[in-house]
Image (cartoon, rainbow, N blue to C red; front, side, top):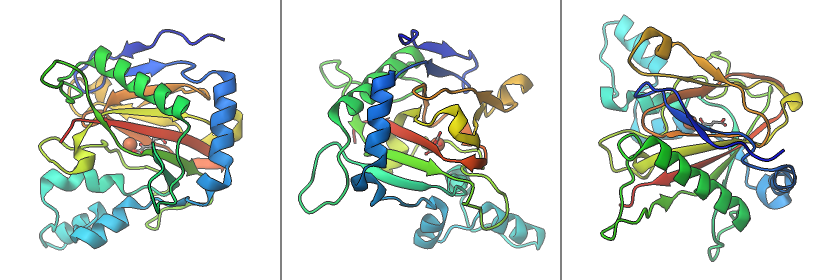
Length: 263
Ligand SMILES: O=C(O)CCC(=O)C(=O)O
Ligand SMILES: [Fe+2]
């Protein structure tokens, strides 16, 4: 089936995204899955517990720890502005970073150029349809869109992975991929593109959900976006809250791509 035209969904300021049905055609999907299954990628998979790494590095408390501290009359260790991002880290999954080019002495796998081109093109379309206000990346002095690209995240979720504190789903916590008013690399993310690689029949659960941060109650209610293999969603990295519900069986595979504003 030919891909349908990407379309912007949701008018609410913080709840808009762009849906790409059939971003990857059948052959591309097969090739992308074969790449994901390759030794080069599989050897790089490691547990993606972003939260614990950050906690260790920055000494921020988790939300549970904060709640506990508050219940006990203690004070929170995390500055409120950072709280959103800390929640990202409630995920359990396996991730591998895919580079655009081979770097000397680096073991990271290189993403096939055609696949990177597809992701870039989707990010660009999402940026065009959503606008630079929602997806701040900016343009150069000549008015050209010149984003930076982070390495692409390949993600695997299986039912075997559990959250240590029993919350029980991968990326269970609502999160955005970037924070406004920060210059950390991940906080310069303007657009996120997520591509689902797995067939619906290959896993249970693992729903991609969004919700608005503010606005009308119907915008704040979780919305499940039904993605088929090869479909993608593009959204404002710092605005749209999202999560992936628990994978109950099988294997869910995704690619996550970010276009960032230049430093
Ligand atoms: O795998 C997905 O569908 C989304 C993953 C995600 O939200 C993230 O990596 O930040
Ligand atoms: Fe995310």
